[in-house]
Image (tube, rainbow, N blue to C red; front, side):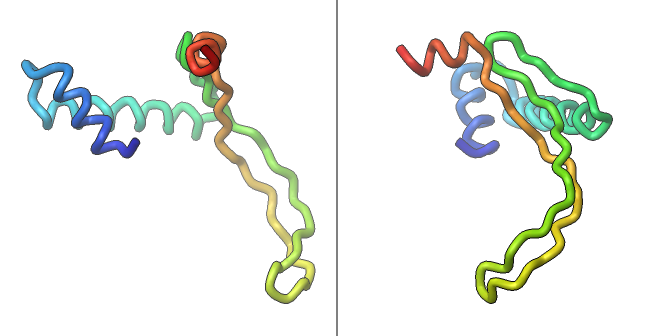
Length: 92
């Protein structure tokens, strides 16, 4: 599901709300989660899951085309852990 599909579904379920308001709401939620992760915070949505940031160490990778070693810098990666409620709903 894309962001525009999510907004369209929310509009179907809430016909009294304007499409532009729903779009702004979805953008605000995603922006708030992104800013929290940028600041190193963890975002937990009960029953859904938790977003956090994991540190990846620098390493030596390999160019798949040539096989030559390549230095890969350390980086921070977003991580999502599914909540118990979501896992139970998916595995019924």
